Length: 496
Image (cartoon, rainbow, N blue to C red; front, side, top):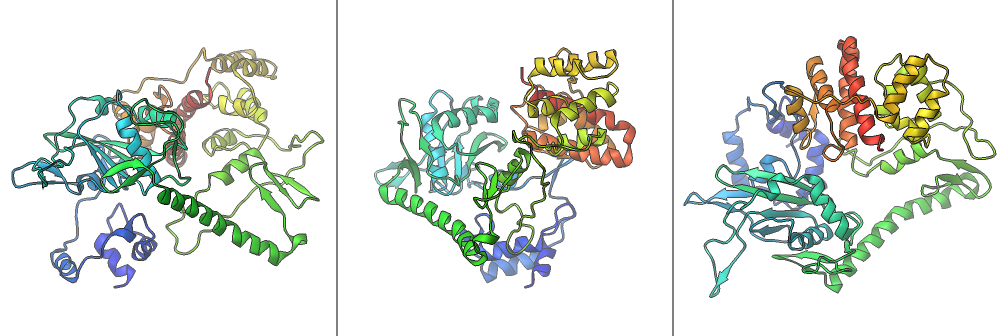
């Protein structure tokens, strides 16, 4: 069956299935599709006979605003619910039992972190997987599996439910290096609630304990997930991890060596991304910090919507530098650059030129200051002193000086629909579909109190979408986005 024919059965109005994604699933290169057994002919025939085109969108929307939120991946509600089934007695049970991808815990607590921390490291060192809290562990009596094994008991307290995602990261980062990446979710099955941690496989394995907890974890421990247990790694498995890491390094470098030999020494320059220099030992090109950060943020696999090999087109400017290494800059900053470059995490001009533009042209409007001050190496006091020396009306300079020192803030407590959106942003990223939704999201971000619950990249993406929509449809409402931009600027870059 061709990909276009397969698409018919899985496309949704709000979630079209990419043809390339189907090819990736066929080849086993998408997620864990390679480990999934193909359905038999009888299952396929039953699916085709019972298929009816859906009329309900497979997405989650906020009733009051209609903002659609994407849900996909290992922690989507549909994926998590599929881990459980109800038995004939009406009890929920964990479908798969303990395996090399699943570990069950009867309850959760931050007092005895070692019990689940070692499972986090073990899964990160293996292929990733789930830690399920609130499920009865396997018990065997006289060689017989207990009837209560893997029965869902539910969380006894509210420690997991009240925990912030940053709380998990704090304990994990303090214990292991490199830091495993986890996602936390609370699953409500009606009568019981279950806590779930999904641990991603770490790309720089092995994860090693840098300190112990006094009970379960010792300094230097390397844990590995075996079927049914998280244990200290065996030599053969550690050797396999190290060999795989070496193999990947060789695979990455061999094509480059072949290109070097093919082009010859006169036609090649080597980019040292750690130093930010492109050189052939005779000539050198310095890569700017902003461009270097963008290069290093590129992750393999982010282009999976296109079939075939991934290609990165790098676009940057070659700029002259003086004898001290400082870039000789030409040009001027516009008000459009102030917002656009902030949302893009960019600053192609001298950071101080952006600050001058805010004070001289801003007219008292809410505009980002601290991001560019940080780029210029200015703290709050130095920023205020720099503003004082800019030729501009005194009242305007006073306005921006108070904002620089933190005496005046763009913060406004979110209320109503904006308050609901701000809470929702801790778990998912809303996408505005119209002008009103863009304003609601901007007001929500203006009520941001700290940076622990929303990633900066998510906040910038939401603001970019709001800015685009309102620029085209309601330019007079852009003031809400400017204020939200200023609040994000304060929270993430204006630390005292």
